[in-house]
Image (tube, one colour):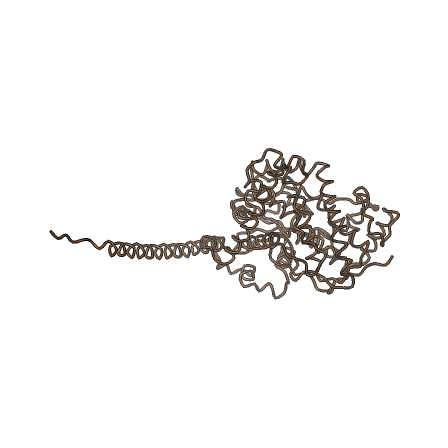
Length: 515
């Protein structure tokens, strides 16, 4: 009896073709639906935000026509705020109220603090980079981290550790590097970014990335480059008229979002290596920030990563930005540099520019009121964080009678505030350390008039350490070198970012001072 045997190979092949065809059709349908839904959602968002707003301010923002008259977006905002009767403006298409009124700032950061958290939109914006770190959370999570960070950063031991890290980096790297390039031009901003990155990594992780090496061009660090790129691309999300644009790109893994994902992966891998290394080697006798947090019984690796990466961001870019602006201003105001040197000679008594072993001690710096005033004045004109935003949880009215609808983004603008005649007087654009001195003694300003380090409950915990680091660098350099900016008449142009970074860097000519 003959039986026909089924062609199993043919049947299997047909099934495979059918499966592949079905998958292709399904993928096409899914992609089409996703793309169509994204376009629909974007349209709804545009309609809701009224991106067709015809007011001159919104049109100028949309077309970037402001760039014809201003080098930087923050300068254009400053112009608008100075012309506003209340010192407050509303960028309708961004749903953003921007203010330069100290009373409004106090209202936001103190009086109605609970009504103006960072907010979910901000947390989502920086969530991939900062996660649930202290600068990206509100409520109980923020309070817990704030309390823990306050205890750690407020201790004498951690401050002395930070001082010693800075001192070592200056003596073993910064001074030798500048000595080696005497008579040459180099990018001082790049030097400061490398210097501060080495410092904050040693302070935060107990790890030395060796970014500031005695060679030109200096070697790059994969982690430093990835961290820079992640910061830059995260900030660029905030410049988009609609968050839906970058969210769709993130889902589809396209363009800048693909780059951001790769950069954050490198940051995550590095942070995990540091955490694993601390566990293997022990951390109870270590002074770095990561070890101190791990010693407080935190064993959640993701939580540790988010905390330390937040401090990396705050401690690296802000110090480098502040130092870059300071030396640009110093090149414009040689009398200030002379006054700092004069104060240094008086405080240190045995000052000698040829003695590289001399290093101003912590207690000596506390006596240098003019230096402190000069740094505060520099930060007034060029704050590293040019603006900061909150999101209103409920309807509110600001002290200048501006109505704030629930969910509105409210931004206070330290950069613009430093240039407001109504806030600082007719000489607001001048670099005058004397405005901070009374009978030669430094007198602090109202923090809501000068919110460079924020103010109220969220005031910067690392303020004093940052100022000490900057003072150490300034004194070490002006004691031994003359720094001449290549083009002192060229006003800084800032690149988009979470902190103020000068586009093109700060080329300077370094010359060793004679004894």
